[in-house]
Length: 140
Image 1 (cartoon, rainbow, N blue to C red):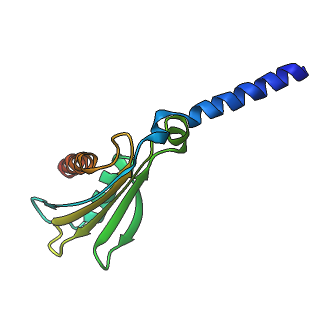
Image 2: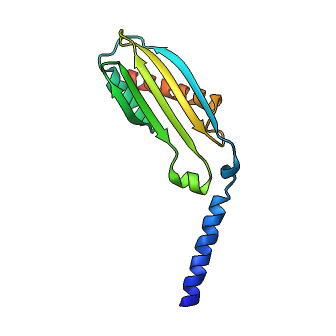
């Protein structure tokens, strides 16, 4: 029994060490900040609810809301499992300021990650996904 327990412990340690040597642990992290503007076809009195529903459908969580300053923020972060097993890390924050007309949306994105999840291309992709999802939310 003692040999079996020791063997299991050695296998667990070897597996853990193997996970820490995943290729992602050695890749560089890219960070990017970008901005875009969306003008909705019509004003929305429920704009904050619409934005929250859209962001949640894409896996973001509401990380800040200030109705007085007409601002809402959404965030997402890679799971600890993908970080440990694959060495993949990503973090994104989308900050949206709603214009007084309730249809102009100024979008700022901050993105950081490795293995293709950071940088300008990844930020452009996330903004495009958000725009498409927002369009679907508005038309439903």
